[in-house]
Image (cartoon, rainbow, N blue to C red; front, side, top):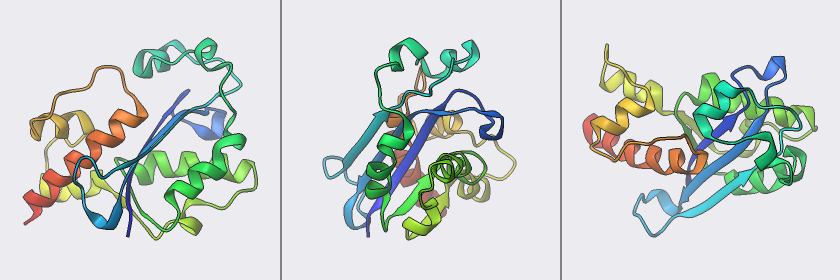
Amino acid sequence: MRHVFFDIETTGFNHAQGDRIVSIGAVAYPDGGLERGTEEIYYQEINPEREIPERSIEIHGLTAEMLADKPVFAEVADAMLAFVDNAVLYAHNGYAFDFPFVNAALEYIDKPQLEEVIAHSVDTVLLARDIYPGQRNGLDHLIARAGLEGRGVHSALEDARLLAQVYKMLLREAD
């Protein structure tokens, strides 16, 4: 079974208030293996068809001008769904942020929800909280705890790659 590590960058934190996805990054590993060199990559920048607040640009570095010639979400949804089809889908804070955000965008264009396409989902922040109770378990903290090189500007693809490495650490710690 494929394991897909997934992240999005957005114009803000609230899809119900009109915030949109500006990039999707995913890294898939076949047959549950997490070895580098075996992964498949999906990355897409998306035109949000709206301005991007400065506070969001500071997080991911993507401006409306940079994304003006990129496809809109409706044009990339089928490819994204095909990439995660029948996979175990991992995201950090996925149940509270990534999955609801993507599902809202899918609903808007009458596409199936993630849960209808994937085999299973895992929110790695919940796993981290079980392993490191009472500690800070944001992705940046886990990256540091794993001894990985930190990130600067957020990138959906780089965050998905880092999440796969963090997950390997979480599996070791859980044993």
